[in-house]
Image 1 (cartoon, rainbow, N blue to C red):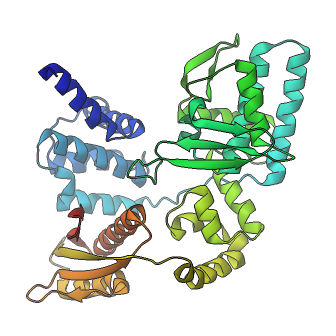
Image 2: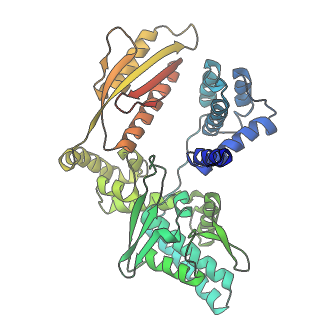
Image 3: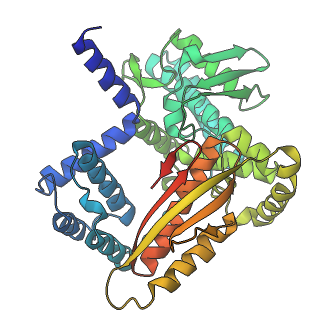
Length: 422
């Protein structure tokens, strides 16, 4: 293999290691810093702090944190020191969060009755388009109905719907179909997973998919694609933002009350609510949708199902040990604290507070001769679940340290695999 071919292959694998959506988001953030704001890269901590301050009133703190992540990634990739980790930047982002609090607005779950309303409206429009021989409107109706029903009954995210490919779908008429996704948000190892979809007597996702495929005569490539006003079918997949826009238009045109509160995520939340209301236990719901951590599943269930949630949580604690042997992994924790200012009285007490509230539940044992090193015993189901637990622990430590006006440097190490989280 030539050097040029090797270089091309190396770049291809490097690109594959980062999701395309993430790359686009990072490029947009860097462009915003350099072009829109007029910053220079590599940047200093002072420049980053001023950039944050200039956008504190027009951007949510979550958006600013995403911009910081992109700028941090650029500096790391280019071999420069990362200015986003400086105490000044940490303090500014904390101040913005205090001055401009933002409560994330979750998409409203689409209830089964509302799903029926939208599908009925779609089918009425579809029937009229077939009578009038309007090919573009017919294809649009078939695509949107399949997208809607497959998204709801599988609890898919919009990006998962966009990544479905015809060659990865097997259909058994009258029984169901199996959808294979080579990767997903929670599939950190890219092993891929098959998702069974049942055939139903009403609101059937299988028949909706077959109607779309038979009408388009597609045999390979993306399932859900763009359509021109003349009914021409695009070759590439819909972008998740485009899919979300299509669904938002559907909610409005079908006459849903508070249509602006629904999004593509309403399908996933709606299915979770439906399953919870019909007494699915949490483990079954997690396995079906693909959640690795109970916290992820419970975020989709609001107070209307609090009693059911409490029952599921209690059942989970008692049932999981009997159903599977949960492995334990030893994790080494190393962290240090640095106060933002002299008014912070006792770093030692803050350290003890972090240990008590973040580490003790993992049976933390202090290492001799060091005030910031501990051994944990972490129960988990698999490598992906361990990864989620460690990410959550890092977030808790950083949040608690920031709340007490301290900058924390922390790393988590799996000594067996040498995996590091920091």
